[in-house]
Length: 129
Image (cartoon, rainbow, N blue to C red; front, side, top):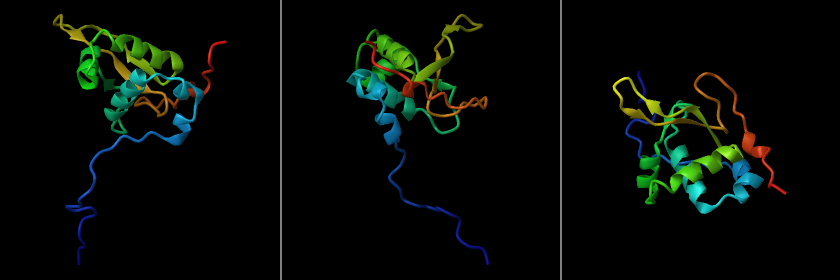
């Protein structure tokens, strides 16, 4: 006798973004302004558990998602990189047809597709004196 498949037609709350307490308890997060925090949540939203290192988010897409001007999000990406929350895995470039390709990102709190361990660089960040 075969049982019912697990979670068959299960009703749930849907997808969610998890922000672990140990990340929020760092000094790097505590001193982060609201804009970069929102950008980090947007990046984390695009992380599905398997695509770390291939998270695609251009400045224009981020600006549309966060309802700000596209020139505003550039310094936010830089701030998240400086504090060690994210790192760029592929720089922006022109593709073979001359069409621009946006950067791809990796979250520092999870291991990447290539098998690199989580760097957790944000835990080492200290407020500049």
